[in-house]
Length: 180
Image 1: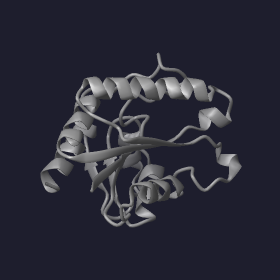
Image 2: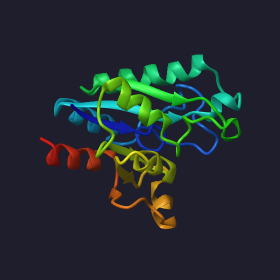
Image 3: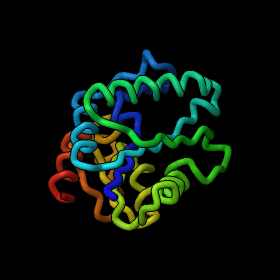
């Protein structure tokens, strides 16, 4: 099975310094919906793994998060794509959970649920913690320059073997071309 993990904010949709708090604030980035559609049509399964500490901080509730994800699913479906699952961490950094990226808890949950090996599993993100969470289990970290990605690249210290692309569309094209 070809499976790719995507971070959400800054990869699929526009990120906000004050958190994406409701479905109106959830706006897709240019070409991200087409990228997911292209992956789907090339036989990829797509899972979103997202830190949503805004829940733990009380900035929005589960109802609002589900509304955002319903909108994301609807727009992806309209573009001809499919997201197979969304996994999220509701905790704040102070909760010391094992699911919040950079820890690999969500990645492990996904590999168990879909019965895939973590080795070489691609994950596309815009922050160092996305890359670290997949590198921790031997997967393939992929950085996009959207969202916080350009700043992440400037800071450096990326896990060994990290691939870098302008956006999700370019990263998706790479995956489609190299894994037929």
